Length: 373
Image (cartoon, rainbow, N blue to C red; front, side, top):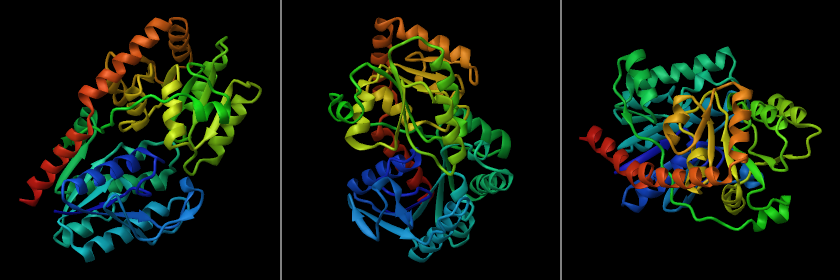
C-alpha cells in the first residue's frame, strides 16, 4: 500500500505530538512493507539548529519538503495545500491528514478520487494562541475532515462524542502510543544544568497559553521546597506569552527554562524528574504525558478528560485553571516520597498495558484496508 502523510512540520522532529506520531507511524508502516511519503514543511529546521533538509530517505520513509510560506498563520496553510497538490499528482492509495488546519485542502484529494483519512489530534480552534480568523480557518478544516474524509480517527472518547454530536459523524478511537522507556542516569543534564536525580519537577511541551504554564509557576512559587521547576520546550508563534512566563518566574532561581530539548537529554530529564506536571486547559492526547508515564514519572495533570482519562488512577489531577488546587497536589506528592514512587510505577504499568505503538499501527492499518476495499 502507498501512503502519504500530511500535516506535520518535519519528519523525525520531537517538536510536537503530531510530529512524534507521524514519525513513529510512518516508520512502522515501512517496516511492514508499505511505501510511505511524508510531506514536510519547507524551510529551516529550528529543532536541528537551523539546518535545511531537502528530499531524502529516512528510516525507509521518503521525506519530501513542499513549498511553505514561513510566516505566522501561513506555514500550515501553504504547506498543506502544496502537499495535497503533490499527493494528488503522485496518486497514493491513501492520504492521511493529521490535525484540523491541514485538513482544509482534504476535499481536493477526495475529488481527485484518492482515499483520505483524517486524524484529529485535538480541537485546535479552541487553542488560546489563535485569533478569530485563524480559529475559523482551523474549524473549516475540522468540517472538511468530518464531511469529506473516508475515515476519521480521534484520540479519545471525548473527541468521538464531539464529532457524533456536532457532525453526526462516526470516528474511530485510536489513542497515541509510546515505546517502553529505559531510564538513564542524569549525566548530560547534570553537566548542562546541574540537575540531579529527583531534584526537580518537570514540564515538557510547547510554551503556548492553553498549556497554562503560568499556573504552574504561580503554584510552585508558593511552595517552600529546595526542588527546582524545569520548563522544557519552545514557543509556537507565541513570543509574548514566553516573555510573560519568564517575567512570572523572575526572582525565583529555582525555575529553569531549558528551551527545546530532545534525544538523550530529554530522556534524562524524564528519567530523573521527581514529578511531571501538565496543567493544560486544552489537549488532544499529550505525547509528553505518555512519555513521562513510560519513564515511571509521578504525573499530575489538570482534570480535563483528555488528561484524566489517560492517567486513570495512576496519577493525580487538579481542578483545571485552579492554582491553589495544583499547589495542594504538588505539596502532597513532595511530602510523600513513597506515594510518589508508587504512582510512578503505576503510570509505567498503565502505558505498557494500554498505549502500545503496535496496537496503534495495527488499528490504523485496519482503517486503511477498510476504506481501500
